[in-house]
Amino acid sequence: MTRLFEPSQINGMALKNRFIRSATWDGMAADDGTTTPKMIGLLSRLAEGGVGLIITGHAYVHPHGQHQPWQLGIDREECMPGLQSMADAVHENGGNIVVQLGYGGAYLSKSRVRNLTHRDMRALIFSYGKAAERAKRAGFDGVQIFAAHGFFLSQMLCPRYNDRTDEYGGDIRNRARMLLQVTREIRDVVGSDYPVMVKLNCRDFVENGLTLEDSTQVGAMLVEKGIDALELSGGLLNNPNLMKDHIRTEEEEAYFQDDVRVFKKNTSVPLILVGGIRSYGVAERLIDDGTADYISMCRPFISEPDLVNRWKSGDHRKSACSSCNHCIEQAKSGAGICCVPLEKSAEQDFFPQSTQIVPASPPHEPGTGYEVSVGIEQRDTDFIPAVKVQMVFKGEALDRNLCFPLGSKDHEAVHKAICDLLSKHAADTADE
Image: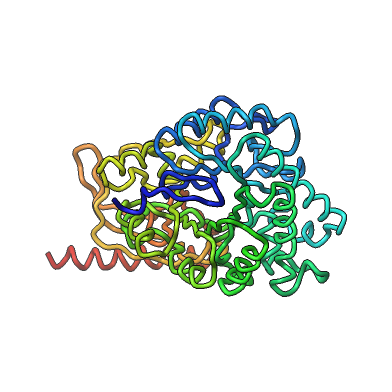
């Protein structure tokens, strides 16, 4: 049998397979951060569906660290009954569960990072330790420290947002100091035989962000502090391409696999790979060739909570997830994260005959443009010549109204493209 379904251990935590549900904000907690039956039902359903290890969405360790509404909290004793019920429900359905500890209150606020005092730092470190102690007491199988995607501990690692001039800023050892102190505090609180994991960016993919070279150094420092596993992701939350959409081919999957291979040469703890994995064959190859030790997924388990059981049964069809990201929009709306099937696309009523892409100017991001087409449009039973202009990003049409200031460079460029295409259309028609 493939190594995907072999049992393994992370510091004594026995796992039945190598599939992990990556931490996902589900928007299902109560307003005060306590758990709800809906949230517990979601996680127990994942355990029933065969996921070996479930990592909760990031739970805030301090009241000021809540990043989003309906986010799980682990910052006070009032959260404990619900947390215990969550852990129990997952265990009853044959799964393991780890709580992700995070602080998002300073997210992308450069001045707040700069102005945190040493007293503030000590208070935050203490909060992480207390949260880990609650997790262990509530029955969770371990904790994961959230140091990715531009949240506080990730920010501290990122020179773009951390310009402190004291011992918490400057070179990578200083920028990693807060994360290492949090790790040491948690380890001191939970003991040596309790799994402590970290989610880390392999790099930030922004100018002046965390680099792969610095990130691998952080990984080595974390191993020295006694972490038990490292989950590798990448990018910042304000990067629109963090969660890539419409992943169609196996070549587009596992975005960070090359970076993980670099970590593999320099890190002794198990490595967990997340990022766009959709196919059984890709997951199997990543494990069998030693690129990663565990496969972590998020959106596929929203679409198919029983995906692991399906693959184990021999049905190796690709995940049904189309990476449309509509599930995240459901959570943002307050409905709770869930898979919303795409509406059936409307029948084609415009048939382009010639097309030109006009690059858009700032503030549009690079890759945005205007697709100008001349063709035939169907209206009821008639077909008439027509011009169509729509916004596109890297070749994909956007649900965005066309709009630019009159007389601007974009206006002039689009107008010229329309005139050129109409002239070509007239010439082609005259030749017929």
